[in-house]
Image (cartoon, rainbow, N blue to C red):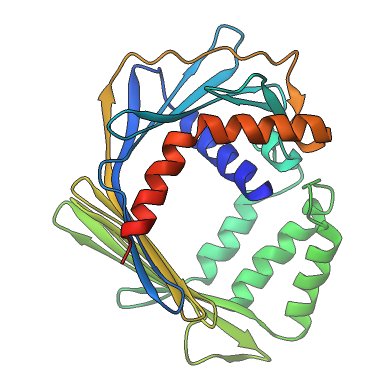
Length: 316
């Protein structure tokens, strides 16, 4: 349930910049390839996700996510108001709410402490940068010096889930052990774009690792590609070629890739003001309420479930 809620919140955050529900984002013809020890392809050509958002008359943000095949299959509706995410779907009798995590609530209100001298921190980093041809290097000790300048002020910053005292202790341990992370990067302009590469090398007791612990490449132009490799963990890639988007990841011998067509179009979509007053707490439902929700969801998503079942049956 937490993963589902996180996904819904992420979708909502992505939708916030949209000016009106007249412009919708689409993701169509997805193809999912899995390798979990056995290769499998799930071809969902013909499926389309339509995402619309807009500001409602009560200054809240409304969201509508429609999943369509040859006919409408499922429609999710949501609204962000105050510190709550209100949810429902076509076919459900009730609206439901979840309280947004504090870190999500506080993002837009976050302010740096007044006693942080950002100019001094920036000067420390800029003065410590090393240039070698097209390569820019920020040594670990320079990064540690910059962090040590931030520590006194950051101790007073409240970040949910983060103990700033532990952060300060870790910075001190890095400095005392002559350890840290050295960053290297290159930047090249191309016709109509740029290529960026960044690497991070772990340093322990003054000795840097021969191989990067983190490797990032980014190409921006007519097409877009991003690749991230984390040593001993896995890799992630994202690319846009024309209207085709591909997202892929691999870790521990397992991998997946998702491709599909993205776009926007003008469409008159009604983003609704949901009933927040009578919404049920999704994380504290009674047994009876859970049973009702489960039954209604199965009925509401019957077309979507049938569509996926057919695709899974054809998977090879």
